[in-house]
Structures are given as structure tokens and as C-alpha cells.
Image (cartoon, rainbow, N blue to C red; front, side, top):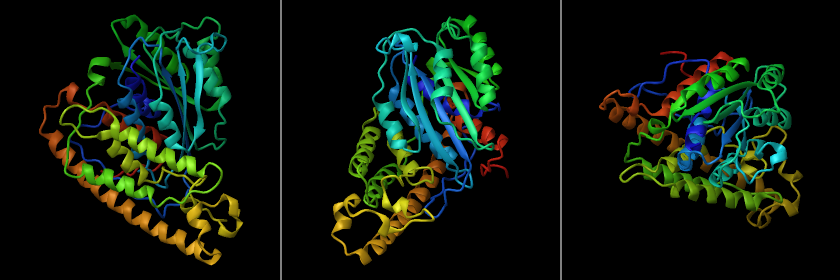
Length: 398
């Protein structure tokens, strides 16, 4: 199954308790910079399970784009939530048969660059698609948040019969999900076998979730509008990297991966004349409150209540910090934080102008199903699912 379609379904899975997609011409709130937003929001744990059996190849880059679309939508929630994302793939022949051809790619993490790196490396290859097995693995293997008010979601998508797994009953997995307080939603990519839809819908319903069908031909059509703000956002995204101050044994590698994922997003194929949407959306995400890197960046680490620069071991400091006198280090970090906040505000302002331009352009187009970008529908359902859990999405007042 097409990875883009499956991943695009992420947001639907998050919010599938709602219904109507956002109209292409409906204004959307601008993303906000989050330099001073404390990490005090409620948790959102999202595990994505993607069928990579090879029955539907391609469009991986579109799938990667959906990660940043989801992040940007959730970043509008106030207080900014604590988002963790995990990734499983299933159905590839290269995976272990004794595990039901299921692979855990990424544990629940705030490291969005790490998730994006994993998505960038996904490849398809035919196999058995065991929906029950991958769902059970996500339920049992992940360290889900224990907070009662958290939004906990598993999102499974595929395009084969949902009940291929004869060893693990779907009903047992559904009962396990309900007991854990995890909503399981399903996406089925229709490819001419309409009789398979009912099984997918029944499974998600039994898990307390909802189901969505996607027409693969329409889902692959991403509405992209080029604006005069695109290049500026991408440039500022690169500038943001210069405000990071790495520390710890993984700091240097994580900083290098940040730049590498910028390049992956920038190199994502686009249609002739279309906007480099993945790079733009990633840039907006990097300026938002859900892009957190306190485990390797001292500027983010400094936001923590008990931060003390003198407690960071000398050997864990990067070269630029080692060159400074001890009394110069905290002022240096504060200066970097100010620079980052300024860049974040610039990105947020440009993103708002860009979105207004896109809304204006899309409003001129016919309101056919093909012209309604799927990601807009996903953003709409995210808002509604979050509101159902008591999150303030910023869309309460119309």
C-alpha cells in the first residue's frame, strides 16, 4: 500500500470521531512561535502502523510531508502538548515471520527528526499483512503515558483483508486496546475490493475508533500552491540550526541529523512548478512548540525549571562552549535563545502570510473532491479529536 496514503491517514486516526473535512477556502489559524511556551501541556502519544507490503508502491515523500502537517496542526493547541510519535511497519518479506512480519521502527519519542529519518528510509516489499499483530505489538511494546487526560492513538492502515492474521484474533486486540485506553483507528486504501471495507471498519469500531476509506487515485493529488514566502521560510529553517548548542554523547550526531533531515525534505520530489512543501512544512514545524530537543540542545534544555549550566559535565560540552569561560556560558545560551525566538517569530509571520495566500488561491478553484486536499481534512479531524479530549485547539471561536 502507498506509504503516503497510509501516513496521510495519521491525522484521521487522531481525530476520527468527527466528520466533515475543512473546506479549501476556510481560513485557518496561523502557527505560533513557542520560544516561551513551557512544556506543560497534556500528552499526545501517536503510533503509526504502515503497511509496506509492496502491493501499492510509492509516494513516500508525500507520507513524510504528512508528519510535518500533523505536527503543525497539533502545535496550535494551547498549552502546547507533549507530543510523542512512534512508528511500526508491517507486511514486508524481509521482516521475521515469527513476529508476523512486523517491525518496530521507532519507539515513542519527541525526536521528530528521528521519526522523519525512519520515514525517509522506508522501502516496500511484498508479504503478509497482519493488522492484529502490528496493533498488538504497538499496544504491548510501547511505554504509553499513564496520564488519564492524554490522547493515546494507534493508527493502522493497509489495503488487504484486515483478518489475514489467523493466530491473533482481532476481538482480543480490540479488548486489549480499550483496557489500555488507546484508540485504534483504521485507514483502508480502496483498490477495487469493496468487500474488504467492512472488516476494517468493524475493527476500528470495536477498538473505540473510527474508520476512513481513501481513494488511492485522489489521495495522491496534493494541492500545492507556490508563494513568494516559500524560499524565505526554508532559509530561516536553516538559520534556526545555527541557534542549537549541542551537548552530550549524541549531541553532535543529532545536530548533523537535523541538517540531514532538512536536506531530505528539501530534496523531496515535487511536481513541476509546485512548492517544495515538505521543506516548508518542516521549517514551520521547527519554529513551533512541538519541535523539542532538550536531550541534545542546551538552548532547549535551558527551558527546564531545574536547569543549571554548571551541572553539565565539561566533557559533554561542545567545542564552542568549551572555549568560553564558565561565567560566559549561560549568557551565551541566552543570546542563542533570543536569536531563536526572533527567527521563530519570523517563520510564524511568514507562514501566516503563506497560508493566507494559499487560502486565497484555493478559494478560486472548483470545490471538487479531487481539489480538496486530504491533509486539510486530516487537520480538521485532528482538531476535533483533540477537542473531544479537552485540548484547546484555538478553533473554538469562529
